Image (cartoon, rainbow, N blue to C red; front, side, top):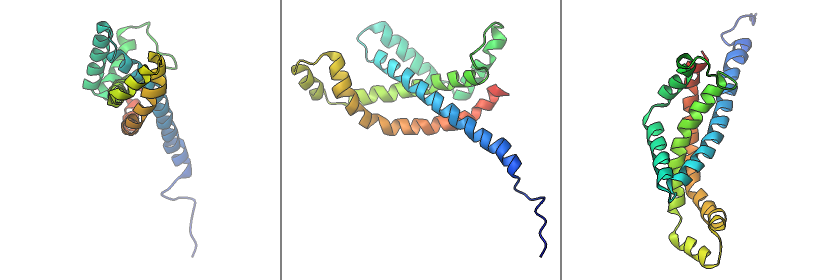
Length: 175
């Protein structure tokens, strides 16, 4: 039996050129957007829990806006910003545009997750730490945040899956 292996349905060159590069691009976008989203989400969550009213208002407005607008619309808007403002350029364009847009969207979702995790820590834990003479920062970083991570991690993993799915919209901006 003589098999001609010169032509086949599966082409390694095609696979390596398109599929592997696309997989690498999706993983890169996911990691950068998720890290940016966690940092932004932490800041927004702390602003939302702040006693300063303007911080709460700004954080709530940001979170409600970016959670209410679909990610594809945010990506399109960020992609069209240089058209509206001719001198505007994102660093590492077009990838920087996708990183910024996905990071801002995921940051809004992660802010609510982190805020809920912080608020889920029992008040007795905070009161006990304060009665030992710990400062507010010591209470937060030694008592509240480690316990809040237990509540936050499952929702952050779910958000990571959503970011992976949203990276497919990156073609809108890159092309």
